[in-house]
Amino acid sequence: MKKRSSGILMHITSLPSPFGIGDMGDGAYRFVDFLEQSKQKSWQVLPFNPTSGINGHSPYSSMSAFGANILLISPELMLKDGLLSEKDVDTCLDSNGVVDYPKVLEFKNRLFNIAFKKFQTIEDKQGYTDFCAENAYWLEDFAMFIAFKEYFQDKLWSEWPQDIRDRNQQAVINLKAQMNGKIEKEKFLQYLFFKQWFALKKYANQKGVEIIGDIPIYVTYDSVDVWQDPSVFKLNAEKELKYLAGVPPDYFSKTGQLWGNPVYDWDALAKDKYAWWIKRIEHNLKLFDWVRIDHFRGFVDYWQVPLGEKTAIGGEWQKAPAFDFFETILQRFPDAPIIAEDLGIITDEVREAIKHFGFPGMKILIFAFYEDKKDHPYLPDNYIDNCVAYTGTHDNNTVKGWFENETQEADKKRLFKCLGREVSVDELPWAMIKLLMESKANMALFPMQDILGLKQEDRMNLPGTLDGNWQWRLKPEQLTPQITAQLAEITLSTSR
Image 1 (spheres, helix red, strand yellow):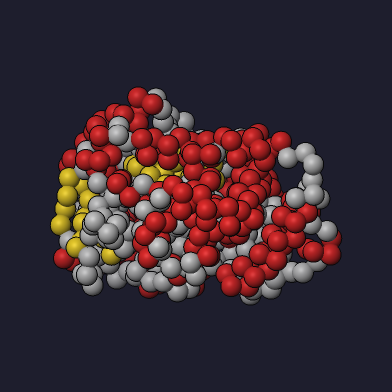
Image 2: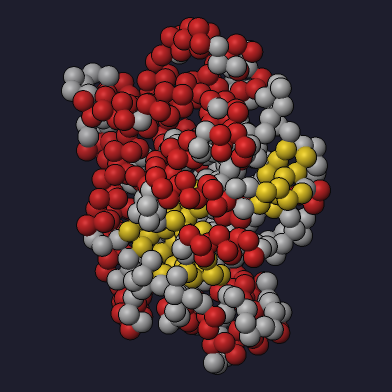
């Protein structure tokens, strides 16, 4: 990361679309046009993996580390491909500006059934055949997992009959034959997603926009990944959880965060030369120009909480082989474009690993004003070139929401001192954007909500809560010529 640039953080679900959720259709292409016109070089998205209602549709809690969220498939593009008719897509979903996941699920599942039926009548399926062959290492198991979950009435995979739970070859073959139609449909939908995504990414790259993806460090227990390869995780003899992942108390939560994911068995991973992670990194490097690895500290040491604890307080730090792991990764992918999410309680060993491998870390501006420290690492005067600076992330309040609800008078005074003047709450988002644009950080990224000057009710996620998250959506009329010109002007004036 040697060139100065800036960009926008916004997930695909937040894009404008007439179908209740952002997708990879016209709204995505128009957003790329906005990025180009406003001189932005990066678009950061959240993880693409499938989401579920039981996890509040968090993109960080998924049944697959490789599969994609089919709710992001565009009906408009299915129409162009001849898989749907005009009549099929003449319904608009009015969700009052937010994603109504139950409505979207019902609507899109109906379209997917129509599209799959149409696809079965098409003679030339070479693109689909090639996709299945290229992605065989994850696709077949992924599709089987979804089909088997439906067959066993959505029970945890560990509660399936023992021969299926333990992947007895003949038992799996028999059930697979029985569920073949469902399995083929799931593979077809993944093919549609990736076809649409790679076309959108190509368009963005041609416009000079790089895509930054996001890799959650952990996977969900009830996932194809754990069912497929339980030896990679710390499970008991019955393949049940022994420990849960999380983080101790920090500025995000007084009781820490108990994520509920299984923790890795790093000894087992090391014996296999991290093959599972190699595949995962390779998969994401195909999808994105940069990848942000969430919770980078977990590769150095990780917070392990015994099963049964109600909060994360009762956990303990365990060591992980960060140096051996990333040396192996970089041997396979030299100069891998990795951004390290190094937020929370960070140790000298974590800082040493990030510096050793040359990964850019993250700086969050709104965290800089809770302490009266001139050497605070999140104050712009203390940034190094090789970092990515944000006003806030998807887990933070908006700048306005933060200022109005999460600051004390002393915090505000420190903020105004840093800005060099007092500003009104309406001026504040752009004043902080300007501050980061002028900083040494080679990359500056801003949640779309801060570009628009939105308040607390428009934040994307409140950590530690399950309801009401991941729903915010951009309205087409909010991308005004004034916003485009203002962002372009400040970008050019700060040599980004």
